[in-house]
Length: 457
Image (cartoon, rainbow, N blue to C red):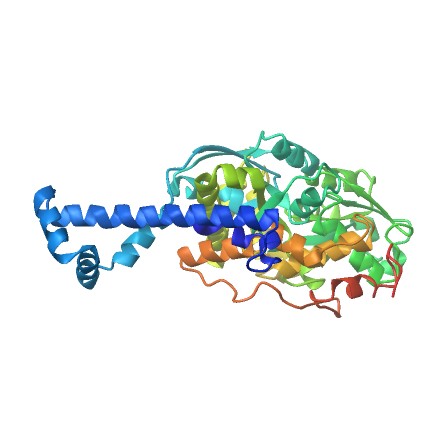
């Protein structure tokens, strides 16, 4: 019951004990109400156990309570029965799932593997849900359908819940990103005609596709070319193209390359239209890509439905993280109603055994990997790149926004329930193409780049 209590909210944590502001007063009232509910559950559980012991003989129970007292009875029961554990178990069950029939949108890419595979492999049903996973044309559609409540939750790019919450590209609506879907799993793919242009300094004038403005693909491509001395807004062109259309655009010579999700990098190789220049794990190993997200409103209005859906996704994500499951997963998600791709293409991505289109066979098991924990430091890094390239302007409260949207505490709780060990902290330092990132110094990081829309320090 306590998963979505106000102490998880950054606004509450930023205030001191005893604060009388309206936000803290409201939070205290809600917490007191929840504490009252939990005390009621304690009494109900204890009463049920007492009734069971006395076999529903009210007179005998009243006589014992009058002579011994309720405290003595509770202590006696606790000495032979783990009463606290029983109460905790009842509380953990929460309540009935408010809405069992849910709609979850997804884009047909391997980044959505946990969300997709949870359908054919039964993870949603395991937690009492009937989920319809709906293939969707593009990220703007995903965003709009969740905002319009046509979808209860969705597969999103990890920057999208941050952008929606900030009102970047849409009206501001608070969103939660409780779980990362995949880490790594992208690549820069170039048209086969450019196989002799492996140095980015040769890419001036190139046209590149990315799936969406608010995507790791866009921010990693910008980062990569800028580290090689190209201004992504002046020296190359970047346009948003839905992932399923990327290979066709490459083959038609409408673009010179793309930083896109799989399986389309591998599909370009499969069709002989392109080659894999670099995997994004070589830019930042362990970077987040896609995520499971829902509006704050859905999470609060349907807390048990949200918790069951959340648990389904985290469970499926851990299942997908095991290499021995990847071939079976590829078979499950390749069909037309999901990815609509040749199984061998999907398997090449998930297993990491693939051809690069230039005659080399690779074995990279973590070409794509799966870890649900939404590090707050990942959110801060994404916000720095949004600030760097002008997608958000003015002062940004990096820590507050990252902690509001990326639900690390909630994810850690679910992971523990499922028998997994979450990280002990929610912030980490990264090194990206040799450049260190300290999430405690985001503004200094933004101003440290020579090529940016924000003036260097």
